[in-house]
Image (cartoon, rainbow, N blue to C red; front, side):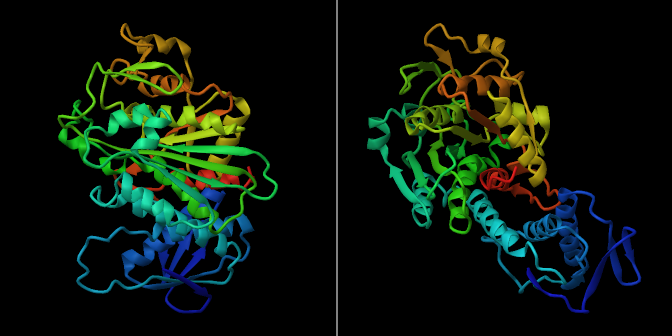
Length: 425
């Protein structure tokens, strides 16, 4: 898609009564920033469906924020992942002619970052594994990148990550990047779950559930997306990104149910379910995050099917120990359209995680309250009060398109974090 200076050519879009008539497609006047974002997506969708190729729209009268959102929605809606598809003929490029370019540069930068993240998530699991993900990270500019190998993982107590990665011929890794502006307003650590393929391990998933599990590293991809954003944007915070990476596969070397893993903080974990693997990676990273003496730690993970049962595909579960942190992420959520809903850290559910063989189990019984119990498990491995956990299992991987979010990997969390880190809450 290209966005060019306004010309009277092609299909004309206008604001007013909704619908298509007399060669003009009418969009209703956007009522909110998210509505403007969806109108941008709608314009691109109409051009593609009608195979019009070109369209023009007048944005004069919209606020600067609405214009940026309109452009953002149009750009995000134009995404396709066709890396492995045979192109029988060149697809016609969509061109949108606009009278206002205010907000376009920022929207293009955000679009580039989201495309980068979506491409990683949607790629083949043969191409995206702990090692190749690490190589992508090392290619980024604007951040200092470190990759920890098996030796480093062992020396630093990433025993959960090591356990999960045992079943794969592709060894686990951890990627850590750092960014520090001249006068940081604080220090934030971002943690992303990086299971590059999740079969469930010896607790093998059903066939339908395995499909799509190359996207189980969406949290790590989103955190890496912030490193990509740093190439184009300035943030007020010092940022550290930590992404533990592993494949969870069944083999003679796989970690097993009833294994006991000792974590770096001394707590022991009984493996109750090998398909509750992501929380072991996150636990390692959360323990390590506190060595950074951060003001805030935020983790993102496609962690539980229970979060999808509770909130559907379009809303992420938000857990926070501090009211102010929860409020700020909720505000950023409303600005970006990446929706979150605060869930309770209900301490009584810890009873479900008690073990007779270790300090704690990695899973409770069934899906009932599963997202809450996963959050409570993670809380055992971070003492910092300012900790935010985002269970993005629903909106990170959509079963069908929704406005500007495609089927498959959406890059959820990138725009939410950018909004928060820009300090415009």
